[in-house]
Image 1: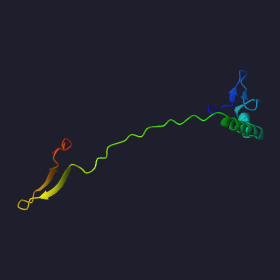
Image 2: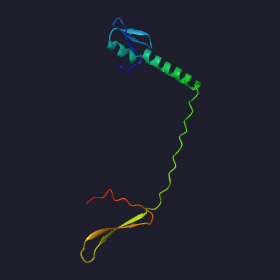
Image 3: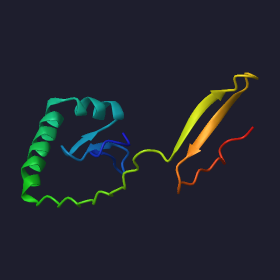
Length: 110
């Protein structure tokens, strides 16, 4: 009942349908009314009336959002190669950094 915009309990304790202006002695009677022909006809009439009146109002203009432009990054400024020492068999990483490129290794830990 909390989501029904036409449901109202009056000061006498009975229930009213604000759409159809009908009185009901209990909630069951009101629920039966909402499934009935009179209420459904009034709902359709209200929807048609609102649809007819809606185009009369000018549609609000869309706010144009400017697209942010980003600089294309291109190729990375470094190259990482896995290596294995032929004598000891120990594995290593070779970092080849392009001149003028800063490489941060802060994310690596041993």
